[in-house]
Length: 295
Ligand code: FAD
Image (cartoon, rainbow, N blue to C red; front, side, top):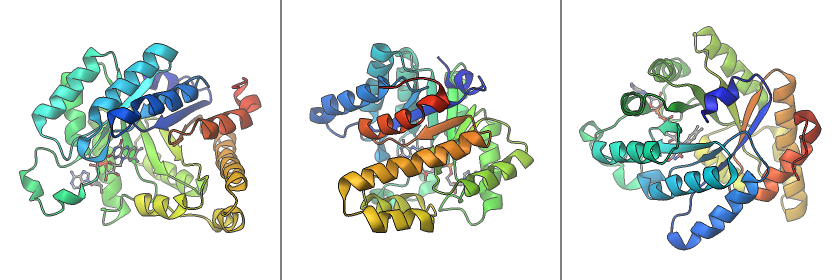
């Protein structure tokens, strides 16, 4: 099933993200965690693509196994910056022939070992190039792309960042998912700006439940996202108590999601990070709001 059809239903949707293993010996553990999340019957699930392309085969395998076994629509991520055209074309063909009809088209972060490479010589430079190629090779594919309410870290200013975002959407993106946001106002401000520019596709806010104190610095470093004082206070107070921090992190994420739904945002994506207990906690907290039991 195409994810855009789910997003356009105008009903509240909740989706979860998992990441693939790095090595074969971890595949079963990851499959088991992803399976538990799938049993909650989310609207769809996404599977990330390892930086540098190292786990590409697992993204496809995990997506395929979860979709076939649990019937949950899957979104397979695909990055291009560290691949050549032949590899990317093979990946698109593999996804197509394995029945995956949703691709999140990303540039990817520049791997550390490519920092000194002359990027003009690479096959890909920006996600928009990948989007054009997916459109050409797999016209029926539903395509998602990333967006950044707090600006992509490499952008000089928001105006340029939004101009490039519009180019991606005009190339054929069906929906956007945001970088993690911890302050909904930043998401709403961003949404007003892009709607004003004529970007009309569904935009899913990305919610990252922080359930361990040590995730905070990593999340900020990775995303550059603003961490509100209200959340920092929670981490300061409960960060040394694992069970309390888990409960508080799930509650904070739930609160954000309820605020989004209450203000008319129907589709929310949760970075559940292979943690079924987090996905289950959030789902159960929303059961009456979403009108169904999850356990
Ligand atoms: P782009 O859209 O290409 O943008 C990258 C930068 O280039 C931006 O600053 C943009 O403004 C600028 N730019 C774009 N086009 C042009 C142009 N024509 N000229 C000049 N500048 C331009 N990474 C992974 O490795 N695997 C994943 O699975 C993954 N999933 C993600 C999911 C989401 C929802 C998000 C938000 C990020 C994800 N990432 C993932 C991280 C992502 O790969 C990085 O943020 C990466 O640095 C940018 O990818 P992009 O597709 O947004 O790039």
